Length: 238
Ligand SMILES: Nc1ncnc2c1ncn2[C@@H]1O[C@H](COP(=O)(O)OP(=O)(O)OP(=O)(O)O)[C@@H](O)[C@H]1O
Image (tube, rainbow, N blue to C red; front, top):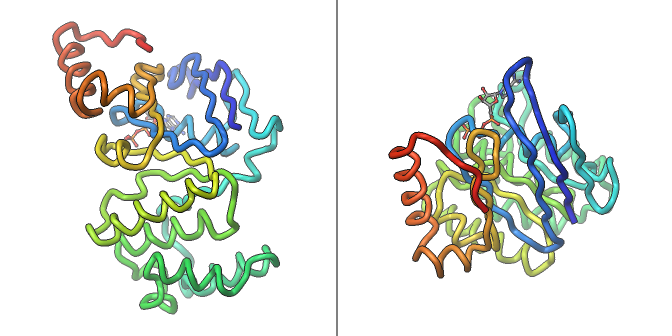
């Protein structure tokens, strides 16, 4: 279980997160939605131990250093010349002796990495980098997985494959947090979702509840954003 309690985060004087509390149960897939700059990635970075909160706590499986069991997507960046997907996968395999050849081959097939295994990483397309980053997030078969806009930018065939794959992970009781800008993706993949706006939890519900109440998450978001545009104020709502 991931427990986020009363997280506040400031960058200098700028308040980015204010009093965020969340519980993500084992086997749950949680979607994080919200406007650009609302604080989703900062919250995820705090959960995975890459940022320290200004105050508040995160515990994973009851431990403060539980983030060591979380698989995270590598961020886009430029790599030193000569680094290939094959080299990275070999590096992870050496670190994790328990990884079987069969599991690694399965992932390479799933993410369709084979054709560019030996290419310099800086020569990969955006979608190819994204597929490799997602593979690296799960290569150690972690119990907790964080995915930042995993599907955006992928072709439809790959999207369908990854949706099916998340379904498999759910069957294996993996706990997954997915940042997304796509309400339909959250409906298909997630059990519950949270909308973060201006550093606050603006709405939090199960996907089933939102669909029952509003017909779809998109309808719900449009309703709330229209109200916001009218009043120009986002109030905290649960
Ligand atoms: N290292 C940093 N220093 C200063 N401000 C930062 C830093 N990282 C993020 N911010 C600010 O914090 C706010 C939240 O950023 P964050 O990346 O968490 O948003 P987000 O919801 O993930 O946005 P997007 O949907 O655009 O990816 C933004 O205003 C951003 O400028």
